[in-house]
Image (cartoon, rainbow, N blue to C red; front, side, top):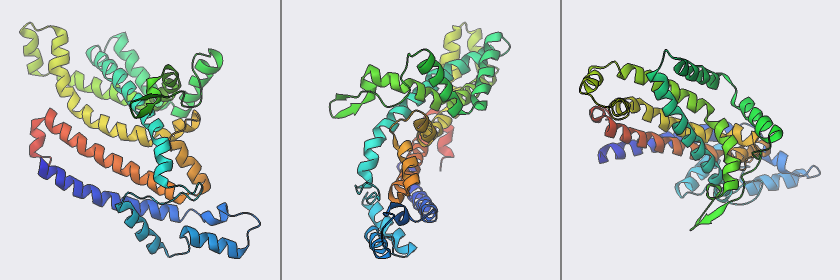
Length: 323
């Protein structure tokens, strides 16, 4: 196991370096931040001085090597817009996005798995067909439209939930979070539902298909012949095998929820790193953009490693193939 972790860690470093290069090249080509940040009346000398101060007068390879050297010491540079360390700018917004991602992930699991089990147990009944029809809508509806409908109904018409912002936060030890307040949860429900819509639909269909397949296997029939309670057969025997592929999807969905929060945070004016990315793109704040993309890559790499390890715990046969 330690050998697998070590090998995957080396692969992860290679992936991070490769994708950091791709993101750096992409950001390097989208425009000149100095022209955007400089005052309209700035002279050519002032513009050149600003470019030298930001390090943008150097060749591309020098800028990239400087970035990699800083990255090795967890230094993402300084924001062009706020003149603050990028890591400080991101860490101000990251807790809000983590809260939103966790709520969306919990909604995906809490709604997707039970509904998928019901759809798999009763595929020909009205309940099962209704659940599968709703899951199709979850794939078909644009999530930004779904978010706007939530705002229209729950905020504008009914006035039961707030439509923008993060809400109040509270302190628990050294951690400050909106998850510790009722107002914070009220601000998280709608964006959490919007962000989790596609994930809920995917998990429903995956669990339903797996349940229908597993329930036809001989060991399930034998368990029923032994007189075991149906709930025990489904939850203890069938669900364990169904969850093997679901765990992989859940891990990837967690990363997708974090990376896909950009649209949700824009619709609900939620102060997370997704909205920070949009603002940074508008201002051509290169250090923030590259740091965001790099952190997302690191997050995905860590999730993939954790999913591989969990997979071996659920399915011992995978231990022979994970290498």
